[in-house]
Image (cartoon, rainbow, N blue to C red; front, side, top):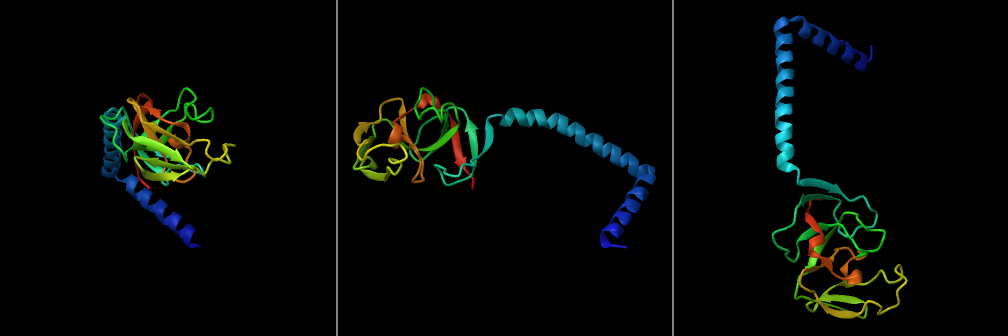
Length: 188
């Protein structure tokens, strides 16, 4: 007799003996009933309490942030702080048709009053280097095509990815604060 066959035979004998005892059957029925009632009662409560919390998984080969799993809290943030991560759905052609309506997460790199300067294909926020524009060939753009100096206007944000190949505000400009649908916390 093989080990697997012996195990299944042994397991079957134990379950058979368990179910022969009326007290065990009564205990099992009550345990199942209580578990079902607890689930039926607690599930709606937990759903109401956590309906604005989601777990997101980024399976893209080329990502704008280095993490794969995120915790997202839906709802407009109380404030927009540099270094915080936000979720938004691009609209009105902000990122082009490929991203329209898709959920995107980026880091806030500039708030109203900050200065974005792109010179010689390098982006700076308030004089601090934030990254090179390495997507020029992919975007069929000539060197210097995105060079500019702009102040982040009221009601807007400069959002960036932390990965070099991120398609972000260095290329397409500022995000409307009203497009932000939640905050994002990288998990791993």
